[in-house]
Length: 217
Image (tube, rainbow, N blue to C red; front, side, top):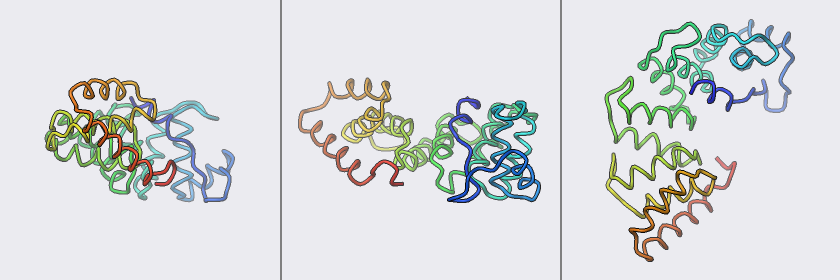
């Protein structure tokens, strides 16, 4: 899980219009306390890009950036605690702590992972209502897995009142992004719905897409 999600988060530039610095410059910036340089250098160590792969060094650098409030570093640090790699103990409570800090800054991946932790009672008491809330925050940002999970929670009435129209809507949105599981779940629920309710769900899907353009969040 950790490697897959780490690879999904790219290097980020030091400034909005500035290119990513070279390795030597990045090290200098990191040593001066630049959080983004610390994150970038940590990412390189985590993935063996330009340096030998070293999860322990990645953790050290992510922690420096995370303690300065950089959400992506907080999220990645949470991944390490979840897996128990990089010289840190496997610790669901600590993973939740770092996910929450990133989630509170609006990071969809962290909101989704926090929702998963609440749904499974990992590091926190099991709480379907809280899980639903976190999945909803991520889903509203277009996070495909969160949209699918939200659809399932509406379908079975977990953490929210059962609603096949909203279940279909969220499955439909995730399926439109290419998730095959969501497409299959949408087809299954469609067999139990009336034409009118299917039409309503499709209308809600269109309206959501109109108000949430790609890259608009």
